[in-house]
Amino acid sequence: MISSIELERLPGIPKVFNELISANPQITTLLGGDWRNRDTRESVAQRRRSFKKPDGLGNLLRQGYRDVSRPDKLEKNLNALDDPDTLAVVTGQQVGIYGGPLYTWYKALTAVLLAEQLEREYEKRVVPVFWMETTDADFDEVNKLGIPARVDQSHHVVYSPVDTIVGKSVNFYRLSQEINSITKDINEWLRELPYGARLAALIADVYKSGRRISDSFLELMTGLFGEMGLVMINPQFPSLSEEIAAFWEICFEKIEKLNSAFFLSSRELSDLGFPLQVRMREDVLPVWFIDDNGIRYRVNGSADKWKSGYEENETISNEVLREIARKKPLSISPSVLLRPLLQDWLLPTWIYVGGPSEIAYHAQIGRCYDFLSIPRPLIAPRISATIVEPAAQRLLHRQLWSAADVLGGREILLRSTGYNTLLDDLFDQGSEQIEGWLTRLVRTFEENSINMEKEIELASAKINYQWNRMKHIASKKIAEKDRVRTVHAEKLLEMLMPEGMLQERHDNCLYYLGLSGSSFADKISEQTDLFKPKHHIVFLEGSYGV
Image (cartoon, rainbow, N blue to C red):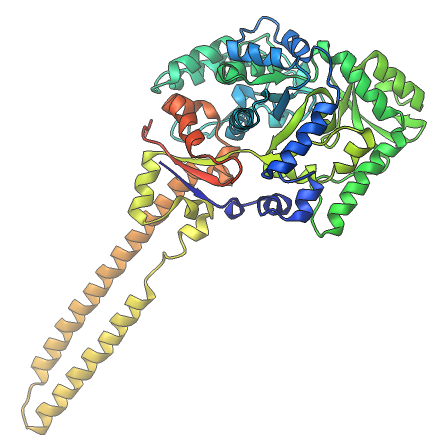
């Protein structure tokens, strides 16, 4: 079973993203159009087909797979990319170990589903492509594996090889011996899941010492999505160097104006009252240099006076910059804002699938597409979901909560807890009334010259004792109920909002695939309307470890 809630109800969603979902024309204009509008889609498709993509693109990407087995549908899609009429639905993410967080899997699935839908609608080949962000140097974004607490109480596994170097591009890391023990541990709990045996065999083959992290990621994603036709691209594929050199050539023709285009788009966004997702500096180029050891260096300064540790802090002229780009194009890496343009230079991108924060910074880059004369793709949000296992379902039912309440945070869940003040007032009022009735009885007896003092005193003591005892018992029961409610809230937050973040940003996909197999993707696919995005609440039927 699947239910849905509005995306704007999720915590921490950028304003730009919410305005795109609500079809605010100011934001859809800054993002190149609304992907939901058929006329807009057709117009962008025509512009994209008129832009020449690299000859033999499919073959260039095929070379990057080396000896990785390619299913028939993947091979057909690689062949299709050699056709100038073929378009692509593209997504991408850092190459997290063992596939990274759930949202990486959601991105890939969205690209596959959207490509299939558009291909049916337009009767033209549309290929899903996943861009592997391998030039990033933030190792903390790729080395963690989020695990549900019912599998591992630590919540996550961290791969920390001894050769970790600050500033080193991820593509230059090879898996060390430490990965073997992590893979072994993961395999132990994967094999206990109903559909975990295949996954265990896959990661045992893919994640072992000596392999590049990027190669392991490519092979894992091919194992998960290859039969669906998902094409993987690593911008560090040597086969792409000539085409990337051509991109840097047009970027560096007027290098001093490259930043100006970004600043113009950013100012347009700011003038509309929206916060910037990425802050820029005028004296820093939107590129990095990568040396032979994979260390990245910023390029800063001004025209004809650029500086970078790559060239031992010597001043670099515009011509030297262009020469480096011609001779060693893979030694230059785009910044987060320039990366989409390199991507759309190489690929026939019709629609790009992104997450909320990613879409927010896409609103800052429109003018650069004009500056480099690259057709701008449309932007669509990825699938977003929270998975609710039977144990969590039982807790929700017991407390009459919804999954949306959990996503709202601890305070929403516990808002109705605490000592029941209404009940407390009733007991106090009852005590006053009992005391009043006893006083009236005493007065009536006295008026009729009847001595009932001892009997009234004894009755009063017994009544007050029983009344206070009942109040005490009621208070204990309410307190116990509150404690249970608090415990249930903590358990639910642990399952649906691990470590205070959305589940899709923490948990790895392997557990859920091992638990439900292909039905996991089928369930999401059947309920997803890619042109009416919502956050899905997915209720699973199987469970493990609870």
